[in-house]
Amino acid sequence: MSADSVTYIFLNAAIVNNFVLAMFLGICPFLGVSAKRETAWSMGLAVIFVMLVSSICSYGINWMLKLFEIEYLRLICYIAVIASAVQLVEMTMKKYSPALFRALGIFLPLITTNCAILGVALFQTSREYSFTQSIAFSLGAGVGFTIALMLMAGLRQHLELAKVPDVSQGAALTIMLAGLLSLAFMGFAGLGAQYG
Amino acid sequence: MATLPDRREEVTLDTFLRGLWQENPVFVMLLGMCPVLAVTNSAINALAMGLASTFVLVASNSLVSMLRHFIPKQVRIATYIIIIATFVTMVDYAIQAISLDLYNALGAFIQLIVVNCMILGRAEAYASKQPLGATIINGLGIGAGFTLALLSLGAVREILGAGSLFGITLFGENFQPWVVMILPPGGFFVLGAWLLIFAWFRHRQQQHLSDVGVAQHER
Figure 1: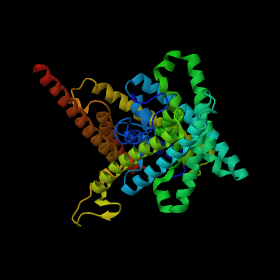
Figure 2: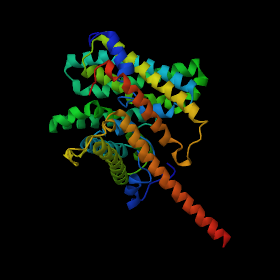
Figure 3: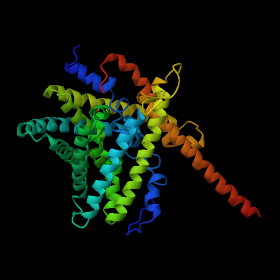
């Protein structure tokens, strides 16, 4: 498999360099929404969708910025596009699934400040992916995020039944658990290239 | 965030110190976790990231504070993000000009300061209500707390994982580095350990208070 092939990019983003567990992008929703499996699943789907939309848009924007040679506006443009994509998802979800809308609560608008999404846009620009490669990359990143979120939610549901010392309840234990998951994902490192 | 005042706040020493301990963005409020874990594999990266974030925080919050009477309520979040993005772009180009090595080490994480929830959170909760002076002092405090937290992670990880601090070798040649500490899982472990230590501290403090209370009651 060559390093430029679509399958390779997809697998690399989803598993080998998992966005949450290997590159630390999107930690806030990862810790915030992973308490229950249902919410984790729908959050994952929302993130995949927003990632795909913003990846396609930012590809177009980058092309246009290069045309006019105003690359220094890249960051501002990207963040504006992501904010509007999130607004779109929010409105759709409010109309078709109000229960889900309430369950995700504050974390839905906070997808805007999910670094994983801006990260996808920035990485695909700096690695100079083509259009199809960008789509594969953003889908892979979204799937990777969902996998990590679902694994974490499953673990945390079991954790609720476990007896732990008073001191380690809450955030500390969750982060330790994430560390163990990340350690497990390092086993995939041999599959692909390591990006800085 | 119970201590956040809604009205104008008198500038005291507490305005600054609160960010270091009581409202430490990383250890207490768990904000801005992504750079905390991602760039702390060495102390120098952690310091650079902390300073860059502090600059963006103070500069953007000052601007938000100055414009707080003019920004319409409906579009305030978008406005804050644009202001923050402007300053991040400045920092991005500045670091690129000052040290290319550092720029390559930090990678995309400088640009990702834009989505650091700590900065947006401060703009929304503090700068949009307080005058310029208080905002700057408070921003400096929060920034210092953030930098301190990054450094405490970065130093531990570099000492354990590479046997050095700020690039200076600490131990002899026989030192076997604990490599996992500078790899991704190490970030989670060290942060978890710090949180455990603070939780244990708070636990003991509470226990001490309740013991004192019981003793007084019995008397």
